[in-house]
Structure formats: C-alpha cells, structure tokens
Length: 579
Ligand SMILES: [Zn+2]
Ligand SMILES: [Zn+2]
Image (tube, rainbow, N blue to C red):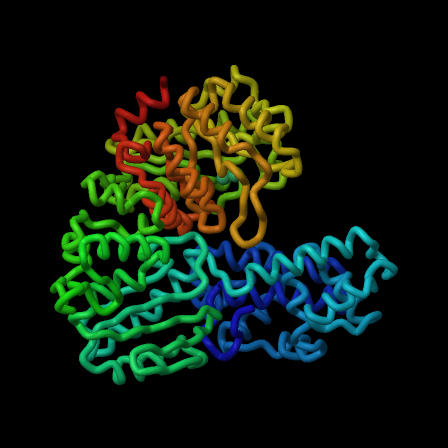
C-alpha cells in the first residue's frame, strides 16, 4: 500500500485509492455495481493520456466516459487537496491491518468479511493461527480446499514480502541518486548490488559514494525527502527505509578505495569469492579496501574497476555478467562477449494497439517509436480467442492491414510490420487458419489460457505451435508473473531444442512483471544459436520504455548484437521475416 499523505497525487496514487475504496465498499457489503464503478474509475485514470491536474483544473474530468459525478468530485478533491475525506472515513471503519489480507491470493472482500465477522481475524498472523486450528473449514463459503489454498497464499505473501521488481527498485534508486547528486561533498556515486547487476527481483538497494567527508554525505542522505526511517548508522554506512518500503544501504569510502569497494559491493557473492580466489593464486589479497600484495601489504593502485580487472589479468566484466556463470574464466582468456546495447536496437515488436487492449492508435504508437530513434516496429494485437482483451476477428485484421499499408506508404525510413499475438489453443493450433495467417509478416504465438496443464501436455501444446510454418516466435514462454504467479509447467530443454532445430525465435518479454524468457535460459538459448527478440509487449506509449529491461536480460544472458533480431536493419529483418 502506498503512502497517502498530503503528497502530490499522481495517476498511480489516485488509482490506488479508488481501488482501495472499492475494496472497502465491498467489505461493507455495498452493491457490486458501486464497487465496480471505483474499479473502472481506477482503470480509466491509469489509461488517461492527459495530465490529471490539467483535466481537474480545466474541469474536464466529467467529460470522460466512465467518470460520473461522484467519481469526478472525489478525484477533484484528491488532486486539489491531496486527501479525500470519504476515503479517510471508510478507512477508519476497519482495523488497518485487515487490509493486509487482500494481499493473499484467492482472498477477496467477501471472505475477508466472513473471517472478520465470525472469527474476529484482523491480521495475517491471526489468520494463519486459525488455519492451523482448522477453523476455516466450516465457515460459510470456505471448506477444506479453500483453507489449503489460503495457507499456500500466505506462504507466497511471506516469501515475496520485501521483494521488488527491477523497475520499482530502479525508480526508487533513481530518486535517491538525484537527491545525493546535490551533496557537494560527494566525488563519485554509483548504484551497486543486485540492482547494478540488473537482477529481475531486488531485495534492497546498495549505493556507494566516495568522499573525504563521510559524515556530511550520510547526513545529507538521511534527510532526503524519500527517506522515511533511518534504521542504522555507523562511521561509513547508513541504512534507511524509503517511502516505497525498500531498504537502502549507503556506504561512503575514500576516493582511493572507491573502485575496489564498487566491485566488492556490486557482487555477486559467488563472483566475488571466485575473484578473491584468482587474486590469491597470484599472491594477492583482495577486499573492499584494496588489492594488496601478500608480503608488503602494499596496495596495487587502481583508479577504476577496469584497472582492477586488468591487475588480475582480466578484461572488464560488465556488472550484469557477475554471477559466476563463467564470466571470470572468459575474462581471463579475453573471450567475453561484446554485449548488446540499446544503441544497437533498430526496431521493436509486440505492440498492442486500440484494436485490442492497447490504449493508442497504430499511428500514435508508430510516431513515438520513430521519435525514439527506431527504424521499424511490429504490431501484434491479441487474437480472437482472447475475447477478454478484445481479440481481433479476421475482418478486424484485414482492416488493420489496410491501415498499416496506408501508414507505411507515407513513411520513407520507417516500417510497420503486420503481425498478431496468436493464442496457442490447448491442442497447439493457432487462432486462425494457415491460409489467413499468410496475410501477416509475423506471428507471435503465446499461451494466455489453460495454464494448469501437466508438463508433458503443455510442452506438446507449445511444440505443436512451433510446427506451424507461420509461427515466427514464442511470446512470454513460461507465462510467469514475477512475485505473483509461477510460470506454467513446461519442459524448456525440449522447447529450446526444438527452437534451435526449427529456427523459432524466442522472445524476451521486457515487461518487468514478466522478463520471460528468464536470463538463465537466454544464456542457454544463445549457446544453442537460437535467435532472441526483445519485445516491450507495450499496451501504451509509456510502456515502450520496458524495452530497456529486456535489453538488461539479454545482457545477463550474454547476448551480443548478432544474437538479437532487433539489431537487424530494415532490409535484413524483412528478408528474415519473409523466409
Ligand atoms: Zn501475451
Ligand atoms: Zn502481448
């Protein structure tokens, strides 16, 4: 839950509060119609392209479809005063901890209300206790199976507590860096730890600074507006908690120690252990303070991390690779890959337009993609089985093709490829006939339903889709949603083997909730010569930025420019797609 004090109300905050209001009303047993109005309101606010404050100040909120008078008043109060009395009153009717129960998968307002009314349960701990006592089994609407599911849900909440997705941790860290940059006593500054290595899930943020005045830097840090709590303070290290909940450790070292400390605090632990081992074999001792010769305890001077690797006979290892996955051995033999970079990316695929569940027209998407410097893009709306996402019927696709042809005829140095994100049906077939799919430049085949198949059936299902000559690539291959849903059961060894044999492209879905294919498998795919495509799976203009997380995963998977299809120029990609 986000802090809802008197801070500036952006769309995310307003939407969160509307969702909460819906949940409180549901808890109170109000009509589902009323509850849904708030849920819809939240969705509408999130999808607004215009600035919320502008809409409020120009009194134009009410003209938006789905925002009635009641919602308009509440949003206006929130945006203009930073709070909402109606929401505060609702909140006061329930114990604050009761709301934690909403985090448990499978537990909605109705069940929470029953738990509260009959067993007086107000915390996750109390609920857990009640389950251990087997008390849920006889409650109305519960039962043995439900009790078991809730127990699993609690376990899931516990294991994901205190973990953050890469983009969440990244944006919180960005605020900290911005604040620290204003401190004149800092000479060098960097993110370290798992965030610098671009891990897909982050537990805490490590920041490293160099300065001659550690005390001053730490004082500045402790008083940043984003810091809510100082949890520890020593001579060179301060620990805090940010508004967003995440813990941050700031370490301040001398400018001479900085390169060694940066390497040390970037990790990973496994990488560092092996590095120390290599140093030892050379008669050196390595730690966060320096690189010392064993006899004289003399520091080998390094002015950068590059120097440090060089002193150990290695080429520079980019942070993303420091996972002890063979990078040290490769660096010793000067065999590290030259990792793909964002400047290598010439085009991006997998866009949803307002034909299905995206919020922009194809022209709007294309303009923005072009503005960001890309040379081509691929539209891939949902297919007809995905009715919940307004999947496209054949006639819609034909209409879309016409529209894209029209746009393409106007572009000189930009091209829109015509595609579809086709559901893989349970028998492995795609959502349209092969004859119809001929109309398209590419097909992304994805599983969007029936996740609960056994491993063998799911593998067969996806494998059958790969046999279709129109399948260009597989979308979000395991279906995982980081920190909320495990991927479905699928034999990835088999899928990769088949992709290598058939030439199927594998997507790195760059949505930070997915980052699917996992980078560990990306590395295997690369070794097998499988082509990778980095796709934002964007449903709006702002989601084009997801691409950078996909690039980070490709880098963690050792991908070079030649492994990534997005790096082909227009002619080469056209040729590739038409083969
Ligand atoms: Zn999808
Ligand atoms: Zn998609």
